Amino acid sequence: MTRSILFNGMLTLGLTWIPVFGQYSQAELPALNPAGLEQQLKSKTWLVVEFGGQTCIPCKRMQPTLLELQTGFQGKAAIRNFWIQQYPDTARQYRVMLMPTQVIFDLSGKEVLRHEGFWEKAAFLAALQAKGLK
Image 1: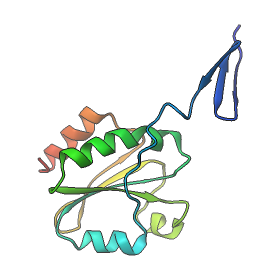
Image 2 (image 1 turned 30 degrees about the vertical axis):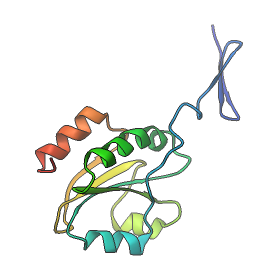
Image 3 (image 1 turned 60 degrees about the vertical axis):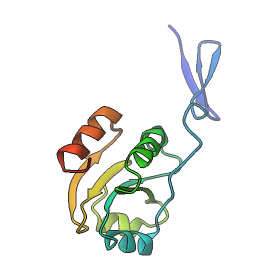
């Protein structure tokens, strides 16, 4: 039987050490604070917000997808992070119960879609397009 141990960002499988944090993109989207979130909701543009954490592994795994969406929807939508550990009251206000939670707001600032957990890029893109963001 092979024993796995997580230690200081490394996963060991038997005698082989595998980095588990370094495999994700170091690039991140801009993060909003509560005032910035409210301002962005009034901007009359689509808004995709990932409510997550800077140390959350699924949140880190989402960053490359979110960066690609930001590039693909440039001028049509704002794609942003919101760090819930820094602003837990705002996270509760938006009923965030799990990291990551992606919330999509339409042009009027109304929530039109919500997803909890890691979201594969193809499914994420299809859901956005189904809501009218193309």
